[in-house]
Image 1: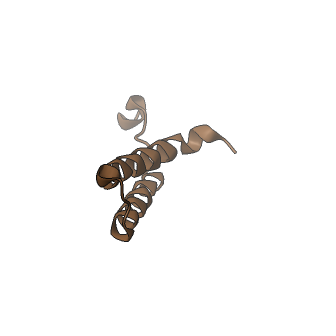
Image 2 (image 1 turned 90 degrees about the vertical axis):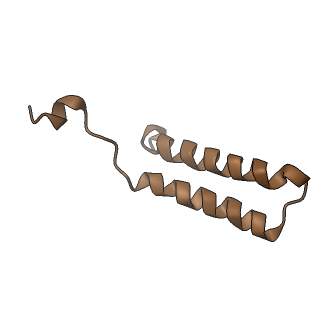
Image 3 (image 1 turned 30 degrees about the vertical axis):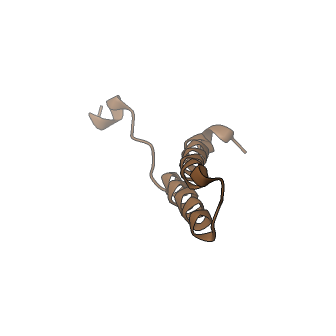
Length: 63
């Protein structure tokens, strides 16, 4: 398995989950609703895998 292929997805999921968890833990208690919010943030970020990388600049010009 090449990690480079999945790096963008891993970073996006980790950052989204981390940010949501940081906000959720503001009161030192993680409720079910906050847990669901964190899970949805991670799942939403996993959608980054579906979006392909932009082509190189020379590919966009059709050369």
